[in-house]
Image 1 (cartoon, rainbow, N blue to C red):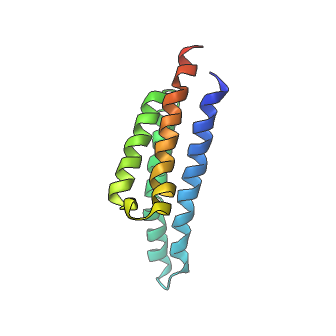
Image 2 (cartoon, rainbow, N blue to C red):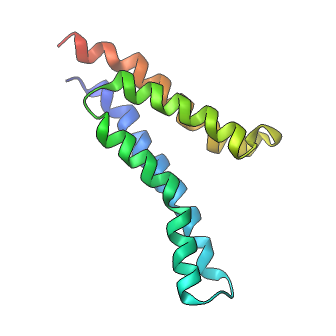
Length: 112
């Protein structure tokens, strides 16, 4: 396996960590500890889904790339990121870009 495939993998991990940071904002509220903990785990659902996609399709960049593109389209409509350019770039464009990188670099796996 060539090194190019590590670029989308590392970007995926960074993106997952970035999304996980949003889960920490629940601890600044006036809710009880258990409600804050519940909100924390609810906010971690998306990063967990992305981790599962990355783990399941680690050896198959085609499926991983297609999954990330589908997730990006879902993020666009579910979170309505098309209404704000910054949120679109950070939440919807990044997984689509990572998905396209997986698809571009999938040929490096086949050539080995």
